[in-house]
Length: 152
Image (cartoon, rainbow, N blue to C red):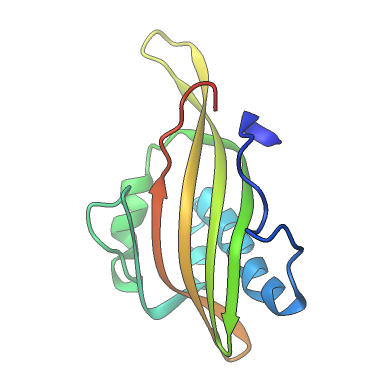
């Protein structure tokens, strides 16, 4: 398993995604990829106009109207070398999808001494998506960093 994380398994039931679940999951994968690259214009295309996005990494919720604030917060972050998404649950009811997932992130940072160090991070994601005009749009998030030990 990437990043040395052993205890995360795809979907709580261990099953593959159904065709119905693949639509919102694919939207999440693309949106996260754009966010990782800090492609804010691309990311904005996935944000519902009335969405609310928050987590323990943000001091306050962010919306489409305040996304420039989010972009400024992300400036100067460590370089993301790789990321991997793991679905925990994908529930689709009509035009709404609730997705719980883990995002494993490997970053590269420079220490005060000038050495390059790689850091593993795990994010626990909880997203709500809404399908409008045949597109899945991110309506709500609450994502948190998972505390891990060096041997996890």
